[in-house]
Image (cartoon, rainbow, N blue to C red; front, top):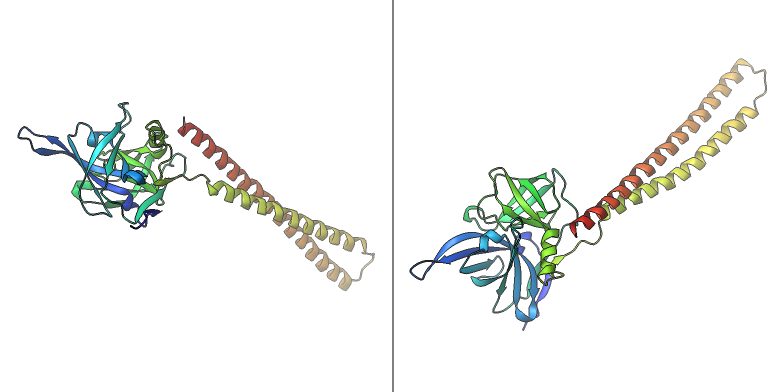
Length: 310
């Protein structure tokens, strides 16, 4: 039997499932109550059990829940594992046991532990108006937040609830409320807080981004500018010394031709000195600007991460 391994999802849509929730009718059959999406979060290999996060309103009160995977044919029965008891947190965790596991299971990197910024472009994947695994790549963050944030996108419709929101291919949260203009998204860090309470400390289908390289890059550029500043400063000192040495060799009076030549040499040395001074100052400005901005972003991200984990 082929061993099951976790591999990077070639497509973020591989992390999204289709969810159909039914209620029992008076004749013993089932009627569709709600349909939406969910995001794969954790796999217990020995039990062949997947845990999937979705919006609570999609599955709450359902008598039967059916799940479909993008990469595995068939319809599978799901059970509600946990429902958030807070009315303002629209989160549920459901579980599905498969008869067998494929050779590979997709996993995704979770977006960096910081609040999305106003204007960030995010991708939403779900089943709007019954169109399965539809990607809506052009959605803008309109109201950043630590628990919830809002995005705008007219293509987000019924069926997107529980659907994953991705930033640069990384999982950022899922849609909980579909609005006519703005839709609401539950942040991945808030989801993680609840998964820990429900016994899943480290969802193995999400890789946490431990390092944000952007501040480090800025600080590295700042360090390079500081090194250039030192080099340019030495060149400036040499040019200044050359200008002073030249001026010390002058002996008056000069002939008209000698004066013209000396003035030209003096102007050339002065221009070289000024150029070195400009480069020195520019490098110093770059060191302060890039290094300072990198330090600021690093501190800001650390503060945001601490707030999100409370």
